[in-house]
Length: 508
Ligand code: NAD
Image (cartoon, rainbow, N blue to C red; front, side, top):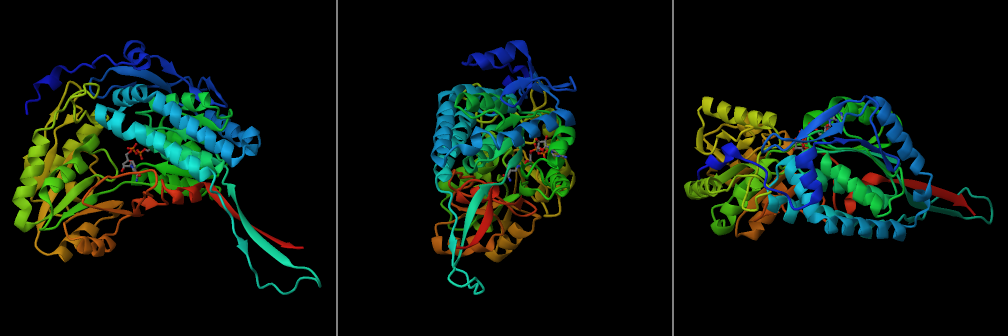
């Protein structure tokens, strides 16, 4: 594949007015507090760029601690306003209306996400934006399924003629700080907002500074759908100041964080100030284990897609592959061929299969892992190039001959880089898979479903896929073991993040 076209890359004209305006005006975007746009008190702005070309799309407000105070106060206030008296069916109807709004603006939201993050058209338009809408549809159902229990006690000291009756109820946890990363901005935001609204919480959302535009647009659509003012507030800005102030704020009851393990640790430490509830969806280094009987027509594209989808900027990406030695050469060559044939380009060009990485800094970081692997004696089978006018494209890369103490093998690269190694014995492959500080996900590729079932229990990870990887659905809980975090998003379990249990015990 020749990549000449990347040197002069320009953004094709988007279909939506909103995306066209970004390419012509690079305007300032304000914070959204208590139902309206409001300027940040610092007067500072941060440029947000199209990573493919480096063109500035907009300037987002850099929120100060005083802005966080205002947003948290608005969210706290909203908990005693009309939001508190909405019935489950009213919240459920609102969530369906939000899903419909997303679906009605699907092309526009996809274009925003492509311009701001660098996604390929198909990734944004056909995978992530529909998945964001589905989160709201799924949690519309959950809003109407909030239940407590009645409890039969053994208490025997009630006054004569009286009875003890006890039951539990679920109550919203309160003000939620939702902090999101840059790799899949809209869908990861939806994974927090949908269950928080279903439970009756209010939210202060802090999107990643590199990719805040779709969160601001989603916020407008959510208010058009009828969310009362103050229930959702969007604070943009730098993570180390705005994010840190939000994570530490005493008016926040719960932090729902998705991002790197290092930042997760800082968020957890900050939450100690008032013992906030915390869920952490963090990094990963997920293994794909290919057994000798794997169906190669499915396995080769499946493992390739598991690492190259969204340029490898996926928390669950299978960045390690352990392949049985008897089929190693065939599988690894097949994955390398898949990578070599991928069309790289601007995400607004519908022929593009992989766009740029989110920033030059991220591309430099990914390249440094590849260079380090070469220095350590590993072989780069394909890829390993940094391209584009802005240096943000990294070609799909497959590396062999690594050891598990090399950074490329054990650290989260978060780019289109697969390390692949042969194994002889399945127990050895499972031991390598588990030899990681992360435990987010993994996959097994085999025709033998009884082996797969047994081995799925041996892989230490929050999700194990069989003959697929990165398969998401609003009904499937996702989250990590070990240093990939704790708590689960999506699925019924996610409601527990946003609801407290209250026990009521009465003598009647
Ligand atoms: P990051 O940790 O740098 O930033 C995440 C968010 O935290 C951003 O909004 C950032 O502004 C904010 N932030 C930064 N410092 C902060 C602080 N001290 N206090 C509070 N907030 C702060 O992560 P990133 O580079 O944006 O995203 C990539 C990471 O996210 C990868 O490690 C990836 O694996 C992880 N991720 C995990 C999941 C999952 O579900 N487990 C999903 C997607 C991404």
